[in-house]
Image 1 (tube, rainbow, N blue to C red):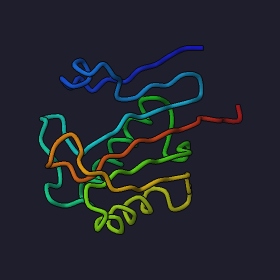
Image 2: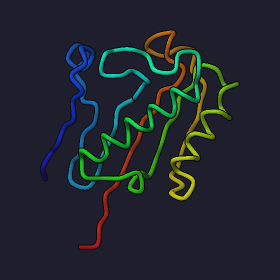
Image 3: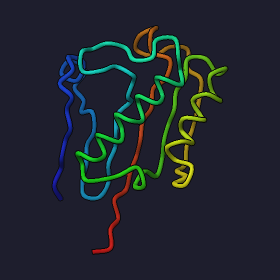
Image 4: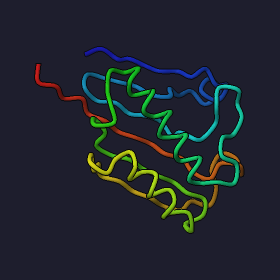
Length: 131
């Protein structure tokens, strides 16, 4: 079985020793993803919904690089710094997954990697195609 890794080249991937995403066979795991762009700038400062929107766009791109789509997602895990943002983040999740309906969790955490990050998302996918 072949292992395929995606790296975004961030300094943290090397320091911590992880991959942004990994595919082994038909299984894909995407590491915790925050709203930071290629220039290392936070997208949607102080706006949890804007951060979630950007995160799900990033996740969709990563899935495409690994030969998958959002329809292959079977589990999402969402972490918010303030549970008061659950509805805004959940609404964005619904925009992407309303018809897919993966298993999901949305929990409040005391902190993420930096105070500017309001949301972090992890995704599991399983690619099953009739060929």
